[in-house]
Image 1: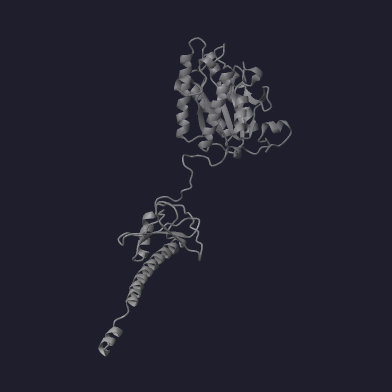
Image 2 (image 1 turned 45 degrees about the vertical axis):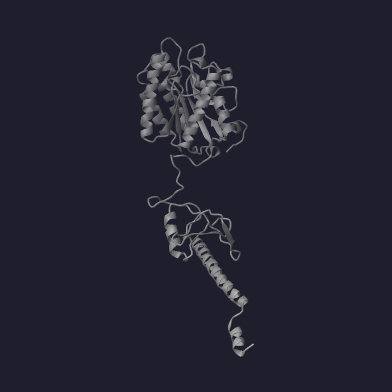
Amino acid sequence: MSWDNMEKLQDAPPRSSRMVFMRSKKGIAIFTGVTCLLVAAITVIALAATGVVHAGGSSDGAKSNEQLAAASSPASATVAITAESAVGVLEPTSASKSISVSTATSITTTFTSKTIEAKPTTSTSDDSTSSSTPTNGKSATSPSDVPLRIMALGASIVKGETSPGYLGFRKPLRDQLVGLGYKVNMVGSVRLGDFIDNDVEAYGGKKIKEMHSYAEKAVPKTLPNVFLINLGTNNLLQNKDVDKVGAQMEDMIDYLLKASDKSTVILSTMLTNKVGNLEATVLDMNAQYRSIMKKFEADGKPVVLAEMHPSEGAAGVPSVNEIGPDGSHPTVRGYEMMGSVFVKAIQEAQEKGFLKTPAKNGIPDDGEAERAGSSGS
């Protein structure tokens, strides 16, 4: 072999060396690409740690995306940050796309050097100051947080006449409230009924103005935070001031709210009546009650209507089938239905935020415990 040929062989690099060099270029390119992706991921995580990127949805999402896009490397990626660990989910995208927070699940890279907790933040719009403010006036308290010191005001229907043991609606109502988690103490000047906590402020045959006078004596002594009122039947049966029951009821309710300033009033409409042709008058009297309710609502006063008459289409109210033989007093089933309607009205008062803890005047929260000699509060 000539010397010239030997020089040519030495000058030509080996084929295997050329392949290594080509593979090195690809390796460098891959390394560079992965490095860019890692830099982008670390940048996003750093922004998340400093509060630039929020975990979870927010009204500031568009701003966060713009900040991410500005801070991203040329190699764009989609990164998802979870609140449990510092895990970046990298999904290569075209260079024209910006980095966005998402739930992509393609390639997962776990950064084990440091754990970052992405804490959810409360998003607010530019014209709001807090997202935790209760809406619709709903109370944030649970039933057990607001003891119910209840005074049932009325005449013979409130007493529970014609029902065995004078249980009326009061015993079923109390049982339901206790089952819902309320502490209950029924209060009043009279103790009547075959159950323990049977205090009531009710007198047979009394009209609205007469019960107003009784309330003026009893309320300051007990300071209830809930009044249950069913009145007007004796005005109806005695044909006394039937055209004035609305105004008289308004006066009495205004007194109750003033005399016991932590109170809520539940006003019952009158029951349907089967005596003679009095039902037309009942409808007119109930219309007066609903009219004064509009005033209370407009003034924001804590008064709730307990609809007891079927004319308004309410479900679960006593109909003529639940009125007893005398045409005015409910049957046992009718009394139970009344109790349920009152309970729903109390729950409505709860949702509206009306219920307030009763005044501390030595009266226990639990009426049964009071009878047993315990404070119950």
